[in-house]
Amino acid sequence: MSERNHHSIREAIRERIASGEWPPGSLMTREVGLAEEYQCSRTTVNRALQTLAEDGLIERKRRAGTRVKDLPTKRAQFDIPIIRHEVEATGRAYRAHVMSREVTAAPDFVAARLHLKTGAKVLRLQTVHLAAGHPHAFEDRWVNLDAAPGILDAPLDKVSANEWLLRQVPYSSGDVTFSASPAGAMEAAALEAREGDALFTIDRTTWNEGRYITTMKLYYRPGHKLQTRL
Amino acid sequence: MSERNHHSIREAIRERIASGEWPPGSLMTREVGLAEEYQCSRTTVNRALQTLAEDGLIERKRRAGTRVKDLPTKRAQFDIPIIRHEVEATGRAYRAHVMSREVTAAPDFVAARLHLKTGAKVLRLQTVHLAAGHPHAFEDRWVNLDAAPGILDAPLDKVSANEWLLRQVPYSSGDVTFSASPAGAMEAAALEAREGDALFTIDRTTWNEGRYITTMKLYYRPGHKLQTRL
DNA sequence: CAGTGGTCTAGACCACCAG
DNA sequence: TGGTGGTCTAGACCACTGA
Image (cartoon, rainbow over all chains, first blue to last red; front, side, top):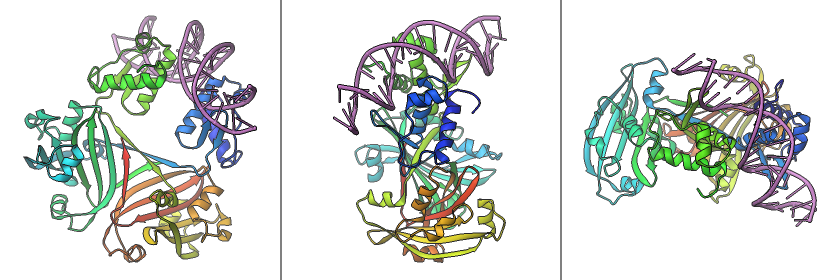
């Protein structure tokens, strides 16, 4: 902590918490006090403390002051990458193979997720993502044709559906679910795995300003891990 | 966007991006320009844009200006809860059952994770977390006795090892890995599942200021999901 | 080298809420 | 009701880096 910017002050305070100077649940020095200690303006201390609050380490309340959280919630943050980038980052060549592509009536669970009427037309795409020629993940995707009609003309052999949709409807919201599923016949075949193998699975539904665009389930090859720092 | 604080300005800008006003990769209006548009100080616009950059939506470079990201990285954020809270949040009673507890020599992979010499003494704890009497998760934990000797006297039937460690060494760093694993004999028995069942698994190693404290593997009952918003 | 974002400052006013 | 954090402002200087 040689400098006096909000980064170094944040880290200095983080260390004081880690060292036990302010035990869990205790009241910390208030902003003006810290500003004096660090010989900086209150604005700078405020910035540092707001970041620590976002990180879930402390709790701040007007009038009540700033407290170290009692049982801090750990917050894990993952960047959900484009699969192509994920593969290329490991130095392997990426390729996608579209196994099946059909316009069909939405089954119930898809209609529910995309807020459509049962039977509405959707595009179903099943794709294997290959890393250096070996299966990396299997994607089972349903696209709402009302929200993204152009996808029928998209060159999905060249650009993956995900990337195409990202460019058309770039800044969408979504929800994501992580789980483990046993490989069914379809997934096993696509991933060159055995039926029943434990597959790490990501379910994802995407929308933009109230329009539901696509829902997909991504099955990773057996052994795949997703790692992060707390 | 009636008010003029950095929150509303951030959301206003987010909507302008979502609406396509600034397509992927394009250069956005610079800070002073936005400050004029929104009739506020540059500081406020800066705050709004920094938040959007943290969210992974835009990229900012001195001299080069602010651009909408080309292929935005989605960032998923999970709060990793105390298991007791996770269970109680669903309205079920929580109980932990310590199946096994022994001081033993660290096997290689544990020694490596905790940066110990092979054979150093560690505490191994195997615990089933129960929700309303049914197995919820199985925890296989190794604790570095040098870093947390007091744990030998802790009432682990009353306070889970996790919570005890959190209170002793509250503000630690860690890394976390999510994956899917097939249930082994031990996990199957503990979770009342079948061997080979696909289990959602969290691996976690925790340290504080260079001292490695504990590593654990948590196997959830079949069907467990972890959900979040993007 | 000049234009952009990154940051600090001092002062101000406000919202909230514990006492 | 007073003390705390939340936020804004105007101005300033600096760090970076593209043209």
